[in-house]
Image 1 (cartoon, rainbow, N blue to C red):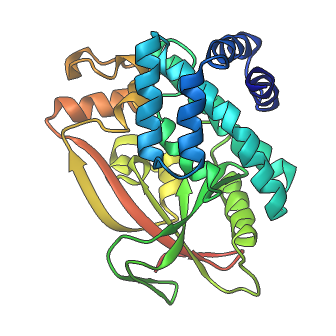
Image 2: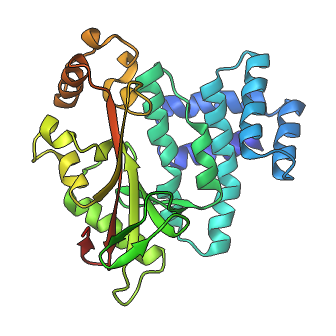
Length: 298
């Protein structure tokens, strides 16, 4: 059963033949293990919180000598079956399900770029997909979330901590990342989250892509800079640690000393120069209001 389900969703999201074979082999190892099914049952019955469920899976992989990232990716593929059923129950289209499920394909590509093998090293993220709080609509992913930033009024809409907003995430799909593709995604999200009759909904993003130093680093014509123009920045932070930015910029070289970091892209060159100057890694949070056609950041 498990192997067939893993095969089904690995093919559905467009994994390569080699990656499909790797996940199929891992599923075949996992399926006969009573300990795995006991862990899964405890999670399904609510006896283990998602964070504990993940810890249990990692511990099982360590005991069995399995590749943790490949194993966790296999479990995600298997759990897509239940997620798929919840999409059907909610009347959400097959197109949106497949698009959202493809998130794992992009995470597998990230795992290979950073660690040299297929799998998933951010498995904690998938609870948001399983409970349907995150969906992929066009080029971007969106999350029904609680706002946790400072009080702000944008486009005439007052937003305070605890209000519901639409979170924006930027998956590493490699697809065109332009003002047009983002606007198309915002329109899809506006409709999906119940926007109508020009009522303004507030979108919120917290990301290294909103770092206000990026325009000076990359130039005003950068796709990243054009993306951040839509947002009103409400908070900024800097860290000496790379966090979720370093591996995105430098791939498997992200742990290197600043002077040894690669310079193969404009982004890498800009960040290397920044780090060599003694500055840390930046990120920011921003908001805009959207009426289905026009964005407001003031």
